[in-house]
Amino acid sequence: MTYLLSGASVFFCGGFSDRDINVVSLADRSESVVNVDASKYFVFPGFVDVHVHFREPGFSYKETIASGSAAAARGGFAAVCTMPNLSPVPDCIENLNLQLDLIKRDARINVLPFGSITRGQCGTELSDIEALAHYVCGFSDDGRGVDNTALMREAMLRAKSVGKIISAHCEDGRQIKDSPEAEWKEIERDIKLADETGCAFHVCHISTKESVALIRDAKKSGVDITCETAPHYLTLADVDCLDHGRFKMNPPIRTAKDRDALLEGIVDGTIDMIATDHAPHSADEKSRGFAGSLNGVVGLETSFPVLYTELVKKGIIPLTRLVELMSVNPALRFDIENDGFTVFDLSEEYTVDPSEFLTMGRSTPFEGRKVFGRCIATVVGGKTVYEDNKFLQKYKSFN
Image (tube, rainbow, N blue to C red; front, top):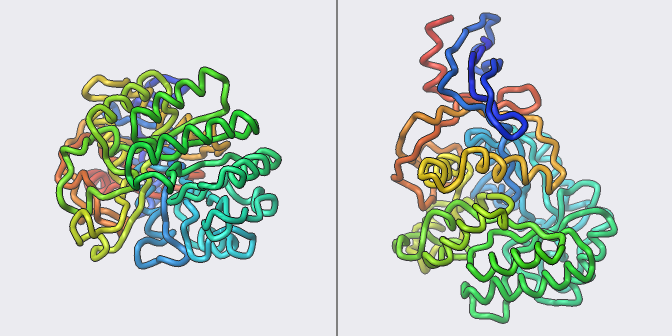
């Protein structure tokens, strides 16, 4: 069955216009066509998340390429970039090929791996950057900062020589863990290195007001730098956190002043994109209270509705800006060809229920929150990769 979505509001060239869109059903292979009044639906270019953890190979009890990409499709994502804290770490072609084979076999959307900056993410020896460059979207040691300044400088020089971006988890291991200084001190250092080397530099999941200020000044100075933050840093503050693993992530949720600085950075363009840092763990690993649980929460299936509800509906940014942050800007920065689109019903309010997730992870700080915006369908490369059951049931009788 083909659904002709008539009169949908389609994002095109920075704005919205009413157009007709075809969505071919996965569940119903009949040749019939159903005309749907889509005046309440919005069509966006597929979202692009440059920071996710799909845990495979090595930790498939937490997530797999299949389950992670299914969750991404349900969240409206057409492409994601996977971080390298895997086993084995993708620090050479042999190790990377294990991941590429899984992606080829199981990915529902476009899944683009990062190579690691250092071998084993140990921070002592650089990975085989030149050999990996053709097959990866960039280089990162996410989960760990590269404390060795000389090694980071050499990594930037080699990444520049092969035309790839360095995407850094900035956390200075010499500072108190989880302190604001641990984040912004290493950002400060890496800005200087990026300026010296001319490397394309991207900062992962910024969470402090000092980080925003440093990156804003670096951009004014002409440094080739971009950055991301995550939905939880934009919508929560430390006073909102409970003694539960679903509020445990790295970097941590910080103060209201930090959150407000991040929002200012979203508004003025200092922050270029929003990424989820989708990081699933098993139920046991996240059920040990705040102190005992592992770092990481899931986010692919809640990112857009949370941000639409908290930022767009409250008038902080327009809808077009959210599309830039979640789709246009990450695709441009990481040179990702976006061949997908996603359809949302922005009028529908519902409660975030982790039992409905397609990811294997269930730990989200947004559990129980009321949000607007349900994904109706996601299409990638001309193929429907997700369609909402409620939508299917509503129009099935039309066949």
